[in-house]
Length: 452
Image (cartoon, rainbow, N blue to C red; front, top):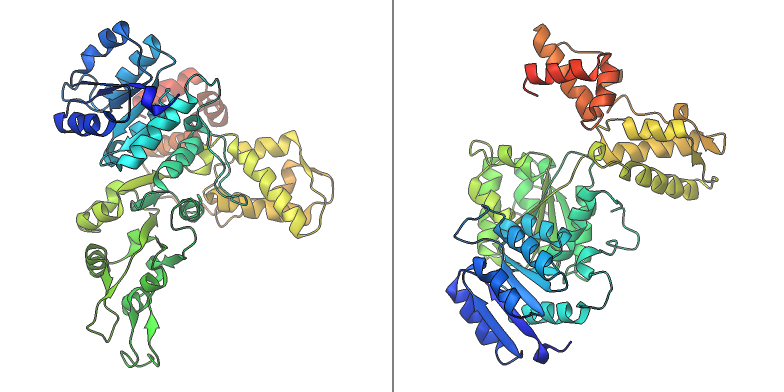
């Protein structure tokens, strides 16, 4: 359907938003209806059919605090399942907006939007309406032809959706997750799908920089600025000009370094060591850390103003133990990769090997799985990999290391053991009870006893 023949309904309790959209769409569409009160949606849908509904994610009525948009989205899809719904949100509610895609929304736009982007989103919705094809908002191309961003789990689907939405923007992204989960791979995927993809992607492990090297590496220096400064050198921010800079392990930098970094991000300028002349920079900032966000926001460790600056949108990467069948998908990917590298035939996984891979707890995450599969390919003598052919490193595996007793209280030891086994089996009570040597009923009692 053409935009000029479309009937559009917009529901938002912000009068300014309604006015702005009405002025934008009135010359473009056949009909534009605005409504402040979401409780009028059902009567409006009863009276006429709309081709597209623009729906705010949050309303002051607080019908379902933080989830109002999802509530009304469900009502619209129940009443008019063929109507395309575009959610209106802010960066603070982007996780809810991602969830709305899975619940039937065609797409979402982020305030403040560019008018061209809003018009294009509505046009896309009209083109796909009634086509019988799966909406593009429900599928996602694998980022990068040779990307290691593999996964079919719900958690990875959410991440891929979020990458698709945030990559074309210049929003600062904070990637959170345990060591080895693939935070750098996600950062590269964001860059590859951004408008800066043809410009530099510069990675800096800022957590490894000493106080003396921090400014020189990031901001550059002039000849003679310090003893070994034999020539002018551009810093990493200058090197990334026009592109993306990825600051890894940002949670490990000192408060003094944080102050320096905050100044650069606020002013969009760097001052090389030994110079008084600022240099303008244009970079897209991506950061990563294994420090939980709540701990990162502790003022004694990390400046809150810097957290807000680097965290326009956050992406939380799940540990491998919580990704289900992605484990086997990744294992097969690494087997193919290393079989080609070492010119070996690609083996198959036996049932015992597959079960071992699925039930292991992966303290080293994807990185540990990768190294385990590389060793298996190198050492394999048969076309079928058995469980004993897959060895996990004792460096990552605390279960094979000498035990360290840190708690002597019997109750606390039992609670810690139950927590560890539950985590190992991703909350599967049947498997956990079996490993603990107790019944499910006995395990339930202990869960209640220890408030787990």
